[in-house]
Image (cartoon, rainbow, N blue to C red):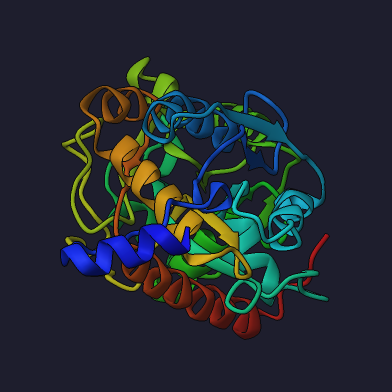
Length: 322
């Protein structure tokens, strides 16, 4: 080795040491932690992205379902993963922005123990009523709710769920007195709305699309910045004079804050490349989601704003976990 260095110096040729094997990344399969059971929204997003990420990284990306704690168990696995770059994950708004501000909080700090990779998808939360309802416009619902305090119920999937916080946000913005009725799942909530057990409710768009398209539910407004391509005739809350109603679910990719910079950059490049792929975006759109793919800085700023927004709703309404 010494002779090669001397020869290179004499010839005026830069001498470059061979790359160390440990500097190569990745050299083995990566683990993509999903904090919910197979078949759920986070799992679908991960399984759509994983093959494209595998092709970019040159190694298998294996989806690892770690359900429990409303998504907190899996996110905690990511936060405490070995700092070798081979484990990353996806978290929902509930686990990353709501649960940390609810009750006893979470075993991880999303801003201290995790680093943002990119926003995976945004999932709109339309406000819907059954088609048998007399409410044709949001203004009709608001007028009736104000005329009959406590007479209208809004369905949710439990205290601190996105449908609950969206409903509280709407109630406060419109100055209404409406009553929460909690259900155990999005499917149960949709059934309750269809049966008029509750007069209104928010839910993830993928849960509602089949009922809206079948004419069984009517969407009155959406909490996104722009109208949605799936239901283009439905106005935004901002259009209707309620810009404070800004509610969407989402699923974002995160990694341990201890992950080395090189592997983290490689995973970010692979994730963003996947979300920019036309076929991946089409498949995510078909699921009722708006594909992401923003920069880690943009996703980090978004996460901080979501923590602040939902933390304020939780504090203002003294919401406690179930």
